[in-house]
Length: 99
Image (cartoon, rainbow, N blue to C red; front, side):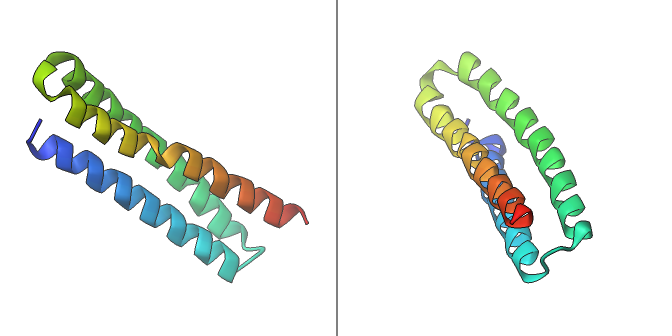
């Protein structure tokens, strides 16, 4: 697992977090802009797809590579850490637009 797969999953997690945070900051800068909200919605869908595929790939390697399970588990946790962050960001956007 010391291949590009492990590095890719970490880069994907960091990039997903960065883009999501950037979209949240843009949303606060240009409030009441429906285009930004739609862009954010589609970004979340694409991020779920890419992160989901990567998670399945890591899970496959977790099952196959017994010697590297600890490293793979850490990479999976890094990838999964974006889920509560995304839910928090979505909650912030919805509550920001309701009040």
